[in-house]
Length: 443
View 1: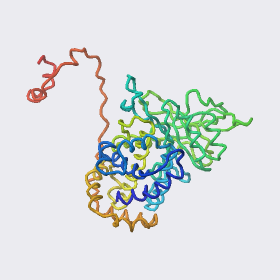
View 2: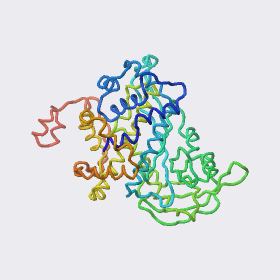
View 3: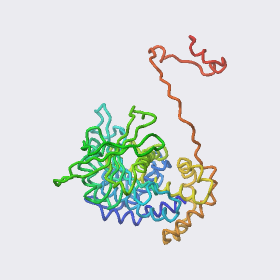
View 4: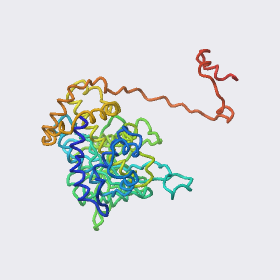
């Protein structure tokens, strides 16, 4: 299933064609861009510990040094085209499987958020004398919650630029009637005005200072959701052309404060009241956590943060290949859910799917000839969806189910002296004593 989905997402001929269409100064000779993506995918899926190990296991017509130079010069426009086109090829397959629950009936929803790459190892000569953290870059990710797929990404080399300044590069992708959901980092007048000018909608958490809307009428109570009481209030901001842009402020008085201690969450939106009610939009905003879970799965399930790649473009290549791999895993999860009704009640774990791939994918790829995969290349999206679901019927879903647990109780550790922190205790003696009081004794 993974091989069939990967062939549809990033077929070698298509990847090379996308490279030539979107490249700037880069060029190809002996080393194709599809070979680079293939080696990086082995690292992202955890099948090889490093890019060097992937190149050594699967021979290339060039040296390892040439491979790293190619990786470290990959242009962001090529990376964005890789992710966008993979979504365009996988989204029809996912839609053909059905069972996708719309988070907002009647509206196409996108969730946008920024993601900073963690500090890399200081392998670059320019960084070796620097004692602080070297940040290789960031990205702005656009997520389709209905299909659970990454729809677009903006790779950005400068890690110090604010994410709100990057959104202007994604605005050309805003389609009329779409509803984008964002956090308070994108709560500015210019962004709200840009969505209104494109006949699109934005649901954003209101910043304490921006966009500072003017209140038109007092707020009124409109109902409740799972986390608190919902209020609505008409507000307005300048529309940038001498007029007024009318918005709705939705306030949620929480039953339980957030981790930051907030008791009220304020949202701003330009969705008309007659199209979606305040309680429906308040529930919709709660789905924004899905993109945070996406980033968490990229880090825990896939090797999306290759810390040995200190070059910004190399690190962004690893992250973008991980986004494509995430879409493939999401497609496999959807196929398993469609094939096994038990998965409708118990969620599938992407961690266990990735573990299965690490165990069997390499051996399967070596054992089966390339001709085996040729019949799947000509299948339509609906045919490929049926093929994946038929394959998924041979999967034991009990091996892939999540095992959720309750939240861990939070306990404040309090102050401890240095001598207490540096003490050691033999675990075997504590267990033999059968009491935690043994730990408090002087050993």
